[in-house]
Length: 70
Image (cartoon, rainbow, N blue to C red; front, side, top):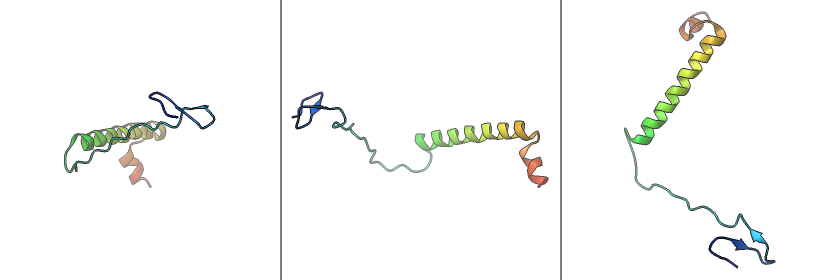
């Protein structure tokens, strides 16, 4: 038995997980410089910058210095 806000099983018990959320899929193709690509690149750049700062604080030397001393 199905209602607007809830679904019940055959035994009349409430089934909270029977209603799946509606999925949205963007069908248009996107290439080049678009909002999603720019946002992703910015986030990856922030992660890389913070990782470099953490690396320098842990090792006491910069990335280029560390690579030349290998």
